[in-house]
Image (tube, rainbow, N blue to C red; front, side):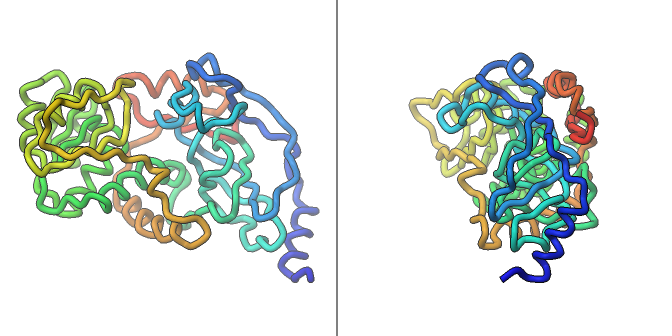
Length: 335
């Protein structure tokens, strides 16, 4: 039997001029994102049962969006694919039984790639955005904040000395700030660009230059736990220098190089992939996780963003690789 809500939703769909075409940034082969990605248009399919259709507003450009395009995770990506893992938009169409979602502002998680004007996602993976959270903040609320919060819950840092590699990155900012809120005794941060120094000091993170090997070793010897975003030689140096009963958590590979494990080490090693620690979909777990994230984002002075129209996506990708760049965000309403 059709409910009043479902009849109202059907009437809404008839009266609203829903788009028939969507613009997307796709890749049909793996390689350099600048040469592999391309803008494409396609007709919208019939919305699947249990799914929502979302008009996107903003999506950030993260390293984690670009690494899959290179083929790093080719074994779990079916081509052609749409790039992008996070962003914000509002629901314009809902499958039967889901009319209560219409008009809501959401994060469409773990559905199709988010670098497109229209995204379809399962309702079980959509997270409602509070009215108090601005679009440009909500668009960046998933990958880095949720990763940082999840790591700190998995490896608490109260009364501990923390070492961050890749300091000055968005995720490291959250890790450093929230580590202090959790009761960390001290936070070191290994940085590459001097442009990050002011921000690090504002957050209470003691800067350690990536070129100062003696300072890196000193910080590593004092660290109870390291959260590493770099991999490569820096990570190898750190884990070899850490003390007994310490923990090294690798969550990124921004250097593009693997960690060479020392023959003898005192630190235990753990690898963190956000997708392996996500709350279960459909059981309220994701909503519960974001209930913890939203107020912390409201109270956190998020680093500024540089907005690029989606049609200038090449400039956005080039910009994100430049030293000292702030977070580039695509305006998906402007393809």
